[in-house]
Length: 121
Image (cartoon, rainbow, N blue to C red; front, side, top):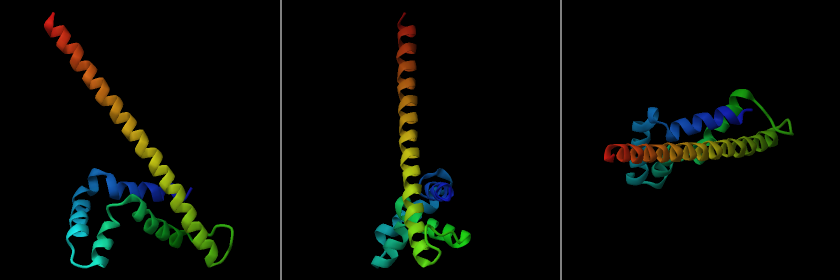
């Protein structure tokens, strides 16, 4: 369950319009910064896979959730498990969005063709 809010936060920051301007700034800095550390820091805000690691770590820190083991090893296992599941969710969501967009474009083309035929008659 913890992977759902992690996926939501990572996807929103790295893909949605509400964060477009900060993401574009980060993308520019990730390409133009003079040091490798700065470039990589800003890149993580443009990549859902990279960003999900940090969101998952924050979520685990906030919830103190462990996976299988009650110590630090459980945190490491939980971290990788949450990141993996969150990225599966984001992949599924991304494919659904592409499918929906494709259907919408196909419908628009068909509507234009029908309108052209109606105008020709």
